[in-house]
Image 1 (cartoon, rainbow, N blue to C red):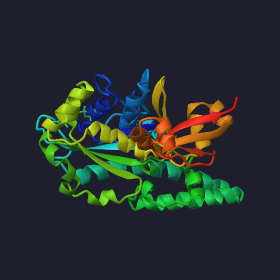
Image 2: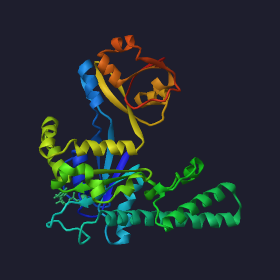
Image 3: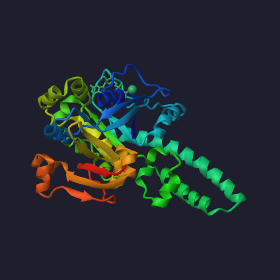
Image 4: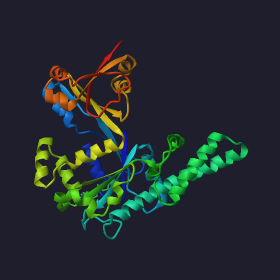
Length: 358
Ligand SMILES: Nc1nc2c(ncn2[C@@H]2O[C@H](COP(=O)(O)OP(=O)(O)O)[C@@H](O)[C@H]2O)c(=O)[nH]1
Ligand SMILES: [Mg+2]
């Protein structure tokens, strides 16, 4: 699963990409060569299980980030730089809120809402073009021959066009599952879940919790498929260069309660509709990624298709119960370990051991 990083020029996109992926990329990304990097999803649960099992290794879930070039004044160039985003499953729009006279910004003063809207407009124009082309096509075909499937598609497309024309991103409109399905072959950008990343100045670190109110962005919080995460880019860039333990110590010195990097990655994970289940043993403690709502048999497939096919039962215990009990045996005695069938909907933080045949 991939999150595409977007935003105006000089807002801290590439810096964010480097922080998240701890990649050492030099230079700028251009539309034709977007940078792709992988981030480990920080997971204290894996570490807590490792305290019990002392495994040979810990393995974390991962997600991908893509750094595409910044949006330009020139519409044509924008279209090109938006193309790599078609493959993204979610977007992260970086909003510049740090002052720095040495680093020019396209607006004369900082204005979060203006910048958010100008990026949204680009996404919506891109979608309008895709939808407009398809509508033309479908209307032409319908003139030749009435076809219920095409008529249904046209209705959804028109619904989208109406929303876009009134400047409403498609992620905000409600569609029935069968309507959404008709759109699934289009890579519509304004329909992708959106993470607004507020890139604050260093001096705002102690009041990071109040940033959303301070910049009057509360109204974004209630929007569907939308999350807002404030962070201090420059501080996080410094922290990402340090070993984990030192970075954790330095947080407090800046007046921060938690790592912005961790919060951002966890927010993207959540926005992508992903959860983790865990496996624990002496060889390895590991977090596995699945879509929220998957059942035990589907989850088994994340490990291996053989386990999915030969699924018999899942032995499930909540990670915290296991950690508090201190061992599987002790958790069993407390009746905290359950045997679940294939229909069981896996919960975030379940520790599972699968019984399978073959
Ligand atoms: N003061 C400050 N400078 C930053 C911050 N984030 C990025 N920068 C600087 O802003 C410039 C542009 O950053 P970059 O990440 O390349 O922006 P991009 O054009 O959006 O990819 C660089 O000189 C960064 O060092 C920040 O949070 N605070
Ligand atoms: Mg850049």
